[in-house]
Amino acid sequence: MFELKWLYEIILIIYGLSIIGYFIDFIQSNQKVNKVAFWLLGMVWTIQTVFLLYEVLINRNFPIATLNDSLFFYAWILVTFSLIISRLFPTHFIVFFINVFGFFILLLYITSNANKQTFSSGIQFVHEILVSHITLAIVSYGFFTISFLFSLMFMIQYRFLKRKKGLRWMWRFGDLKQLDTYSFRAVTIGVPFLLIAIILGVVWAYVSKAEFYWFDMKTAGSILVLGVYVVYLLLRLVKGYQGKTISMFNVAAFLILIINFLLSSSLSNFHF
Image (cartoon, rainbow, N blue to C red):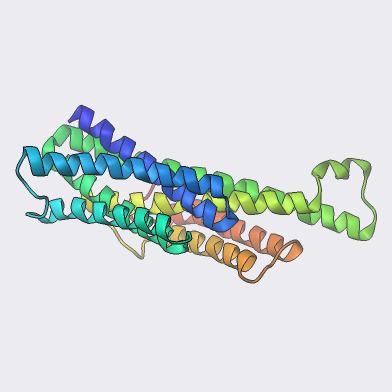
């Protein structure tokens, strides 16, 4: 189980990186990132296929007999469809959605299967899922913080330039367009990290049989933060908001994040 646990973790890491890559490609139309995401997803499919062939050819068991086995086959089907769509059609957001759902299904299978195989190792694996959930959430907050600082710098620089009272050291803040772009890129990376963190948290609560509440303040707050930053991306990409307007929205979004981080934890039923 020790070796299998590490293999599970490698699959999830590769799958998660693929999801992040597809999201960045959709937002920024980066073909290099798209190719990397595709090959990472291909690695996930290869490992899953080896597992599937082992079950069918060696164990003489097609993985549909139980609900848990069906989850694995379901995840394999989703990854297969995602690869086919990526190659036959222009990259659409549907590929990202398929992979997010497939990641959730595969994670649910792996955590459930780990618990059933070896109790102590299963407990350790579920604990590592919780650690990953917290780590990725904090990493996403880090990217959102960087984005906030770039937006804040943009607003300060914009104010001084508009009033033509800028001091010589103010020019070290950087070009306005550059600050706006860096802020946007930081949010683009932070959003998929937070999404994966929320998925990990939900699966951990389900598998560990923790007393989980969808309306828990921390849970609802994290989903709200994700929703606010998704709105930021929609305003930027669909409505074409840039500069001062989107920077002000980003500052407001960060204030919501801070409130969730500081206040919601104390009101949560099962978060620290």
